[in-house]
Length: 53
Image (tube, rainbow, N blue to C red; front, side, top):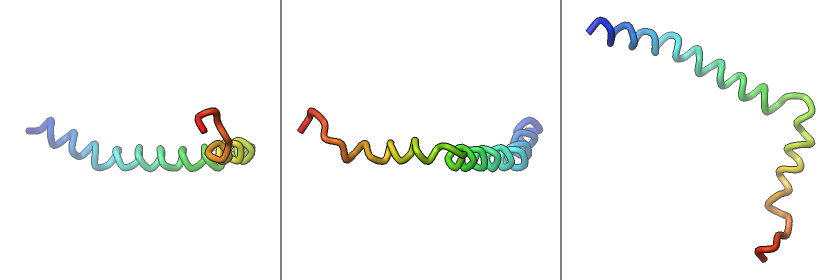
């Protein structure tokens, strides 16, 4: 049971830190400089006429 308790405490403390750092990294990746043009182009994809019409 000691192994379970150790893993539980590890997940409770460091798991939260890891998930928070992942969230901050994802936000920084999305709002990085120079990505505005890329996302503007991707936003137009649904409006393009394709050959499946």
